[in-house]
Amino acid sequence: MTNISRDSSVVEINDPPTFSYGERVRSRRTIRNDGTFPGKDIGEILAKKGEEGYVTSIGTFLQQFYIYGVEFMETGYRVGMKRKELESVDNPIEPQKPKTATKTKSEDVT
Image (cartoon, rainbow, N blue to C red; front, side, top):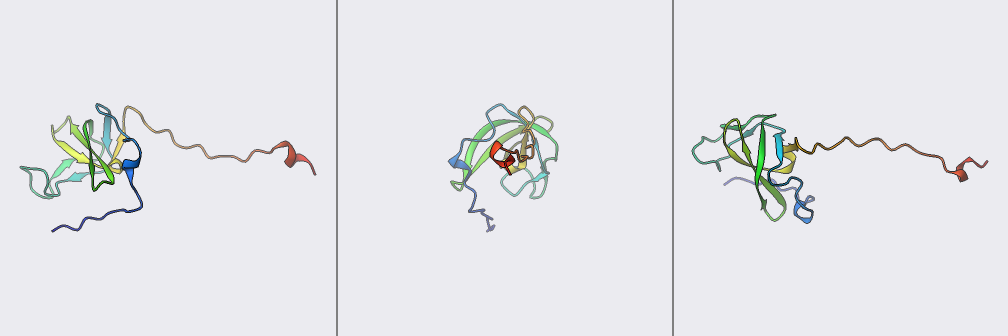
């Protein structure tokens, strides 16, 4: 039996899914078969880092995480992936700009 590593401080399903149906996404890491992909050996590569695909389904896992079914065009595989394993190609997140301190009128008085 496999031990499931569960990050108990994160409960994604309290918020809406990060990705939408039909959204184009990119794999942030190489994904290998953990034994749940039929017809492939355990450890066989299912999606390479940087490979692009489309979200075809959204489910949940352990009442905690969203699992995005992503169909990869290059291989034709549909792979279940977590949010941290994906990034959006259609809606990239802009990097946060560092906040700068601004003086108020009351701070100028000495």
